[in-house]
Structure formats: C-alpha cells, structure tokens
Image (cartoon, rainbow, N blue to C red; front, side, top):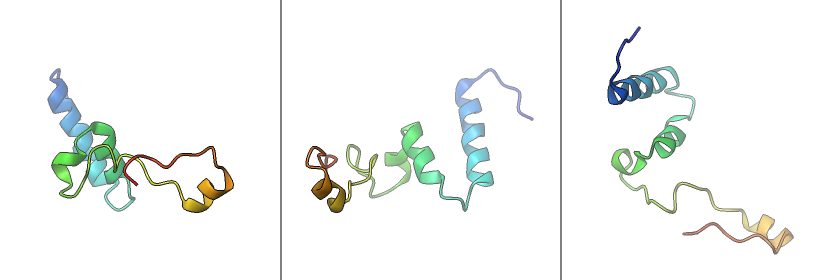
Length: 72
C-alpha cells in the first residue's frame, strides 16, 4: 500500500505496478503512448506516426471514403 499526496510519485507507482503485473500481456506499448512517454522510453518511436496503426490497404480499397493515417 502506498500513501502519498504527490501526484508524480503516485503516477510512478501506478506505472511500476502495471509494468510488473502486465509485463507479458502486451499492454506496455499502449500504456507508454497513453501516458505520453513513449518517445522517452522507445528508441525508434515517432510522435505523430506511431500513436496509431496504419489502415490496411484492403479496407481502403473497399471504402474509398477512408483516408490513411498520417505517416503511413
């Protein structure tokens, strides 16, 4: 149990807990993006591109109203 009124310590405790508990469940990447710290933690991460996935070309072919996500 952690008792603190310091938001940064609280955030760090939550981040550590999620990293330990969900280590092999493919949540880390999405947590880093959601928290806005992916650029600091992932060496090849590109802000503005890697926050979203590319739309598959087959889906764009089926629906011409779709536009590809930026950077892809």
